[in-house]
Length: 152
Length: 266
Image (cartoon, rainbow over all chains, first blue to last red; front, side, top):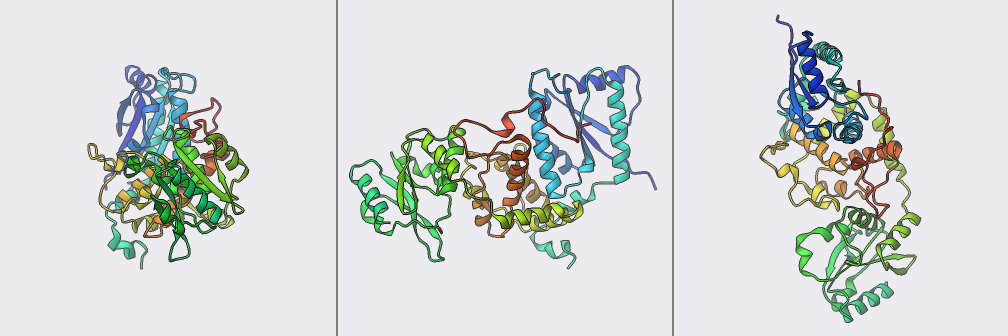
């Protein structure tokens, strides 16, 4: 059987992580090709709904990455983002969402190697977890199949 | 009660108000929200411990725009909602005549600052049953929590009664009604339901005043109040902000501290 190749979506900020990923490329650092990078102006722009949307569309893992604290191009975007992630993380944890599939990171424009490492780590961790079937199953559940869900 | 009725009657007489939002006796023992437009209707006005419905939800409804001056009989939840709405720039000082009753005495708030003071002295004790239930949730494993919530949320019919009953869900267009892009699936599938409740909880995080109206309104009896309660507990613990206690804007997600602590960012 062919090995499972996870689909990873990365939401990154334009000024640090995107430039970091660029640096990884120009430095000829090889990393896993499973990641689809989506560029945003700032981590402050990365709404939690985008993360939900990625999982809704079949992502097995999501990376959210931006400038280190105090390095934000817009001064405070990443501080606001950090608060939002802290709250969002608590909510997902409370709902029992598999937190091992959502990754947050700070990668600066100079950290091409860190970005490559991060992606490789994420891909190997998600590969161990397998496809995100729990989430996919949900889209098929409706009111009529509660019994099936509860194994009645 | 007669003091309240005569006082509100006087306000109608002197044309200080043309609408009064209060309670009448409901047939299940609880107070039922009621709208009084003249003095003659006031004999049905009542207020007691069982008047728990949060009347602040009506203040933002477009149907009330035709009334020039509205009076409202407020319990603690309603007062907290009014404070939060003020902090969010939805209510102006002097826009409403706000009354409450404590120990059979009618209290009229001269301004919103008075409400802030009154609320700080009369904050309700947290319900021990809910705290015990919250501890139960927290003791579950991740898989158990996932099983519990997916099962509970699977029964959601997406009637959005939780949204309609919430005094702080006042957006004219809600994100679930947005279909370009379609953020949250419309059919009541498990996935759409989960997403809707995540969205609801996130948009109320740090704003929810914990009145419990969403849960009371839910026809499927889903314990959705725990989602916002949990987030508010974490926000109070981590950032020290409690919604519905201050007139000044103090929204946890629009402020930050440089040294906010987290343990999950690599």
